[in-house]
Length: 399
Image (cartoon, rainbow, N blue to C red; front, top):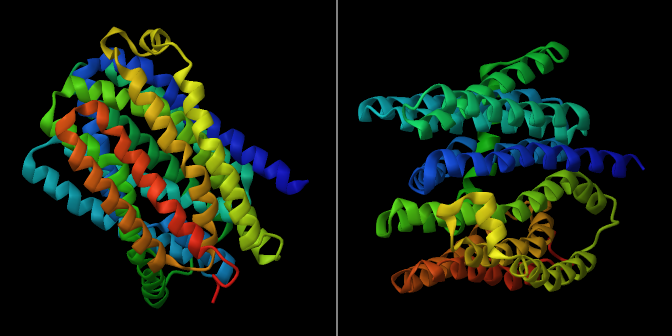
């Protein structure tokens, strides 16, 4: 019963925290316009790329360290990861200063602050402290939404930059408060030797996964860079708004996955979850994926135009295809977590790289045909990885 209770708390907290940016979507699409929202989407892509290098999968490293090595040295892993992220943030700020770009500076700060906040969340989740985890999430999401509206209403200067200014300010503040609260309960015993040991662990865990996450970046973000270069910012705005609206399903699936991963790992550890059962669940998830897209297809386009604004006519086609692409992550999560548990990071990276290559081939093939074809690259990329993962999730996967 405690597992169900904690899972429900995690899930509700994740959904509530993610719902606030979604509720902000119609405000941003109207306040920025299609062109401004397209520019925002472009810099969100830059943010995602920076987050890969700054984060280096620290949230996963913290969770795996806890389950494999215990919690004795976990605070030092957390502190070392924070110092690593801050060092890269300073380098990024020097680049922004050289470019004389406020928006690049705020994007760099947002990437660094997201890494620090994500580490604090992972620390609490692996210890199954559901309520503090949810409190951090909700406070960060709510405060960033409020500060975004205040900044955009108080000044018309670089509205896209103001959105990132709100995000980085709140993330840094909440992460600092969470760190200070945890540090009071567990005083630091931080030495150079422990820092180097922790850094080696973070690098050993995160570097092999860079290809895996880079392939995810390619499949989830590269299309917007191509659109920004080949089409107008307004067209990118329509495309990005549709992607974000369809992303509701992705948010829900990510929330469910994040909330259940500790219990997924625990079930494997207790021999209650086997490769055969994971495969069966993956098949069920694969069969359910088209149903989500069919449900969205039945919704009239006028509803989406009413929600997003008059400038976003034509978003319905994109939303249907993006929903199908996101729904295919249901079997993906079920299969990939099994391999993550057994530390098959290099294998995961190789598979992800192959999937990204397929995505790129299709993306560049259909890009000259028109924007309407671009979402099919996501569907194909997410579909291509499933049979490979299914093959490697088998009873001897731990060998």
